[in-house]
Length: 402
Ligand SMILES: [Zn+2]
Image (cartoon, rainbow, N blue to C red):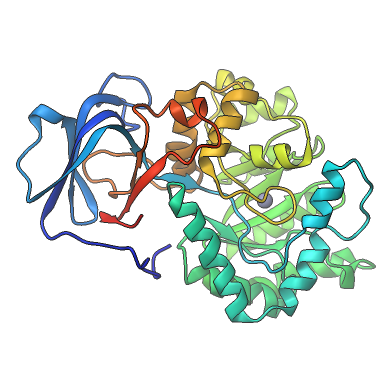
């Protein structure tokens, strides 16, 4: 989300203080009340350029060139959405409607989106990415990862990443989303393509490599080959792991030093233990369980074991067509065992950890000035008032963009 400046963008010269903040989530335990979310009451934030210059109690704020009165409302770091699939065309309304109406639906799932995406023009795909990023921004998301995975040819995967790269620095190569129909008879040849010519064409545009490690997609050996090849090209692994069935994805992610294992719905004790003792973040995607009426991942079990938990939308047209991090926060509190504090942390600092970023997901001196002003006196309202558009203003890199 770096190169397209929103039309509403306004910049103020000099320093700006946002004052009269009833509750400020900093995610810095050394600030505020000493909890992981580093809550400060009656707070102010001072922005200088694209950075946070100061946070603390409003009465102690230094003089600034400009001031914004938060009016007794809450401020949180901008959401960091570390998992989405935005480079696609078409939609899957009929499939969702059938699923939610209890009817069988046999059309092709991901393959439907692959066909529509291949048929789309660059301009159509670019406009779609811009549209969903803008939609997310209005809901407080200031950093968003996105992936390829609906092209599944060398040209279409590279095109998807080239388009994504125009909008965000957090770009993931997911040539290994599914084995496309044109390779159904020879999956090994498709793995050779993903680890060979397709990787060569895609690596220049991506920071990350991902694989859907699942029955019916890629098994443990294939996933290992794909992630290892990506790593040799300088890409950092992340894994779609243990979503629909128990399997090797999570332990492979930890073993290979992946930044994140995503979904984590079906975990053995050994999987939980691996996450608790490794550096791999467990990224939970409650929009997917909501939209497919599936079992919830057990966030409480992961946190109690000592794992780092992130929340993300998984925004995609098939299994989770939401760009709303507040919605995911509410689901995580209601159905996955997180407290409101933990859910807000996971949607901000947790997402930053899953993207190995220390400059976002927190509001402390030196951090990027990415923040959301809520139309509520507390961050708890994100779960307490589900479905209500509570994000009333957003700053990204120190500029008010919504
Ligand atoms: Zn996904």
